[in-house]
Structure formats: C-alpha cells, structure tokens
Image (cartoon, rainbow, N blue to C red; front, top):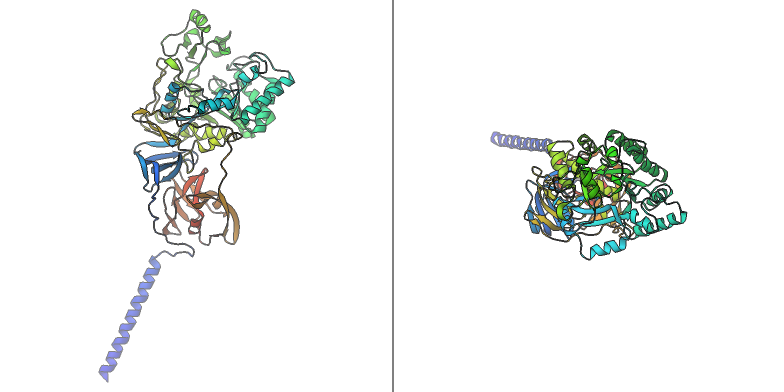
Length: 607
C-alpha cells in the first residue's frame, strides 16, 4: 500500500513538473516572439528574376534627381529601349556592364542648343548629352524639319521650337521692322500655331538679334503660348547693366508679358543676357515673379565668357560700353589671336564667331548655378574646324567636375537635376515625349550616362574648343549604347521629341482600387506593371493619414513599416517578411503592388 501511494505521488509530481516546464516554455516563447498582427503574411523571398534583359548595368551608384534618390550598388535592367528594373536583386542580360565605382544618371538634356551635324553630335554624346533641343532658333516648318532628321537620325534625341526670326520674314518683316499690321500678326500667329501642331515645342524669340519684334506682336505670341500651353524662349532684348535700355528692363519686359497672358516663360543663358554685372537684382526679380505664381525658368552655361557672331546686332556701335569690353577681350576661337580695331572691322564682314573674354563675372556664374529656377544648357555646338565656344563640348561635364566636385558650389544631386529633370519639367506641358526623359525610373526611356565622379571634367579651352570631356565612360540612348571606353560607337539611336499635338501620350493602363483602413474607404488608381497592379505609396499614405518618408538612400517609412527601394525585404510592426515585388520608382514616386499593401498596415484591406 505504501509503495503504491509512493508511486502515485511520484507520477503526480512528475506530471506537475512537466506541466510547469511546458507552461514556462510557452511563456518564454510568447515573450520573445514578436506578436504578428492580423493580416500580415510572412512571405519567403521571391524567386530570382528570370527576365533576360537586353542590357544590364551592375553595381552602379544610381542618382535619380526626380525623387532625390542616391542609391548605392543598384542594378539597372534595360528592355526594349526602356528601363525595366532598378533593383539590388541579381539581373540577367544579353549584355552587361559592371559599373562598380561609377555613377549612373539620366542622360543630359540640352535645351538651348543648335542643329547637329555628325561631328558636333560626337561632342554632345561624349559630354553625356542624350537629348539635343534647338530652342534658341528652331524651325519654321516642323513637319519638314522632323522628317528630314528621321531619314538619317541623330546620335541623340532631337526637337525644335518655332523660330520667330524666320517666320516673321515669311510675312514680309525684316529683323529691324516693327510689326503693327493686325493682319500680318494674325497670319504669323496662325503659322506658329500650325508649326506647334506639327511638332514644334515652343516659341523662340530673340529681341536683341531681331529688335523689330515687340509690342502687339510679342503680346499675340505670348497669348498663343498660353493657349497651347507651351513656353516662350527668350533671348532678352538688352544685355547691358548700364543705361535706360538695360538687362533689368529686358527681364521686366518678359515678366510683364507672362503676368498679362499667363504664358510660361524661359530666359535663355541668363548670366550672359539678363544678369551680367547685376545678377543679384536679376535673380531676385525672377524669384519674386515665381513666388507671385508665374511660371518662369532660366538656363545658363558654366563659363565666364560668351560668344557670338561678329556681324550680329550684338556688335553694333557702342558694344564696348554696353558690355564693358575692349577689342583685346575678343578672341578668335581655336587660336590665341585677340582682335584689334582693324581686325574687328575686317572680320565683321566675314561670318565669324568671337569669344568675349572677361565678359561674365565668375562670382555671378557661381551665384547663378545655385538658383533653383536655373537649368543647364550649352547654347552651342562644336562646328567644323573647332571655331566655337568650348561650351559646345564640355558644358555638362564642367558643371559636375568644376562646380560640384572641385568647388562644392552645388551638390552632385543638384548638378544632375539642373541637367536633367529641370529641363524635362520645363517642356512637359508641351511634350509627352519628354516625360520619359530626365529621370531614372521604371518605364522611362533608357537614356543613361555612367561617369567617374573623381575624373569627370571638361577639357576644352578658348584655344582648343573641340576637346572631348573626360570621365564619361558609357552613354545609352533609348537603350542602345552610343559611347563606351573605346569611344563613340556611331549608333544613331535618337528619337524625335515633338509637341503633344503631334505625338500624343500613351494611354495609361490602370485599375481603381478601394483601400479600407480603420473603417475608412478611399479610392486610388493602380497602374499595370510587370503584370501586377502598383499603387503610389506616398499617395496611399496621404489618403490613409499615415506617415511617409523617402530618404535619399532609398529607405522608406510607411506607417509602422520600414522598406527600401529595389529590395523585397521589409519589416512591419517588428515582423520581417518579403513583398511579391520590390518597391519601384515610377511616375516620380514610389510604387508597390496593391497585393502587398496589407502587409504594411494592420487592418488594411483592398477591393
């Protein structure tokens, strides 16, 4: 009996101890394991991307100025001329380039340039330019102009504005003749409207070179620009700080037109024509107009001297006083020759360009390059024989090499923005084609530049203008490689950039979803990408009243979730999981598949 009771007692104690151990283990596990909110699904990493891209760029430092993203060790997948992947995941391609140690940026957009011949195009692409637009000048017949280039495309993308200098001649007015006849103005406006409908990207007006343009004519053209939602591109009427007819008066003229008509206005190369010796006042005028609500932009080239044709209006009597220059300040490009009174008279009868040395204060160049409304344009091409300003070969490399790296006047991000997204945005109301330029995002045209930040620089000088830039290693235009370390490849991959009237936008593919969170329902569009529907995370966060932040390094905060561009791993409420597809840069924001949204917020659903 005693033995039986002892055995029973032992069994009971043992079972009790076992129960206590189990309870302790449950308690320990419960404390140490993170609680998983309802609705969060723990997903394994998705399978490797099996797409075979046309080209893969590996291990690049990727800068996208549209979102302010500076991402290290990212891979870019190019497919059918577009960017199809921006990720840290492995990619496979028919061709690949290892970009370790190099910076990948959108191809540079040169808005104020001139028509290219093969030799000048080589300097552009070697300077990272993938889009060359003739907005200082342009064409009087856009259809013919675009058709002619399409028959033997450029190395780079191309487009042009309506060239008022020529178009006013077609209605019988010389460069110095004021147009007052209402019928002539009506005919001019009709011709410019037709030109824009045929593809021209804006209206180019140069009152300094064509002093007859003004008054009722400029007002009518400005009203047309507002009506068609294109910009007017002005080479200002005066380029001197002195006298009654000065640069600030010229700036006021175009600001008043913009104020009266609501038209978008772009001031070309403002440090050399509009702000010389009066930069603080000039920039303040533009800034105040922008604060007022006017759509005003400007551009510049990063040199402290300009160039022009000797026979032009710029060198009419009194030029020394207007520009505070002497004959000796004028230099024949490609030589060391400085002009004298005698050679000035002789050369002025010839079609010759001269450089105006000491014409722009360097401190004003530095001030200009820091203005948020200013973009970079070259205002030149390298012509046969090199008789040009070196800006035609080195403008864009100089901005990064001299003003970002060497002098630290601007950041690398700002330098890239000035040469890409700012120019694209200037033209977006006029052109749907340009909306795929100037950014590194899913669906954008694969216009990409790879450069070495430590070595990129212009090499041209007044004595040797036709000198290729250093440090740019690779250039792709619409997904086709046009430059590699061996040199220019001769690939004619350029496509036209036309007005939205001649080249309408591709229809967007999207589906509207209803997101429900905390019993609040909101509608949001989801775009079709990679056979999934993607939604704008920032827009969703705003609708759902959740915090959102995109850091420069690609890290993202969405509510309680932490995620990163180009990576499928994320955490939410302390729980690690994976998305079906990594967040992507698309349409200037961060997008994520709608099916992954419930993992970001406890209690979020969609239908």
